[in-house]
Length: 214
Image 1 (cartoon, rainbow, N blue to C red):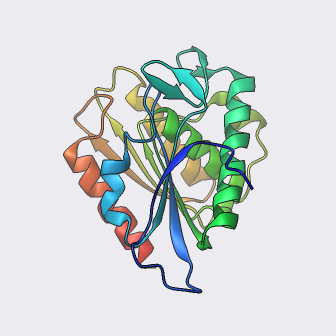
Image 2: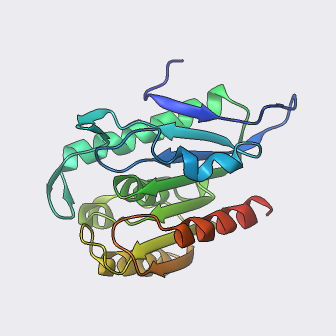
């Protein structure tokens, strides 16, 4: 089976036969690539299979998962395609590698966070945890998507108060939406713009390390 998307893989050096491992699917922001966020999660590679996935659309100087028609408004067809391709990639990875199907995590920044939260809604409790850094949930996802139960889903959602790209209020709306659906949400605010600060990094690493112990 061929991969539906280009990706970078990090995994434990010593793979124990017949053992399965948690998986972390990493999604970058618009105009970036699969190398961008790897340094943030490198220290997890002895515990987790890390799949850093390149967006399939060219967006100089890098790539994107979908196109947008305006602020907070992805092109619906392109977005739906991206959700489908990411779902297919998760299926591919869990079939090709020794992955624990009950311990799937998503991490995304900006476009990657938007996709991560949408996949959380579309796949529901198939996903154990999501780290969504500076994103939003498109209106058509809330209105039209078939949402699976998220009672066992946990999220780390963060947003910068001074984000000039995606308004801070959207980050607040993310946590409200998931809480209403019954997910466990840890919401973090930073005095930053559209970026991942050192404190943000330290906080989400602590969150995922604790989740991996459960």
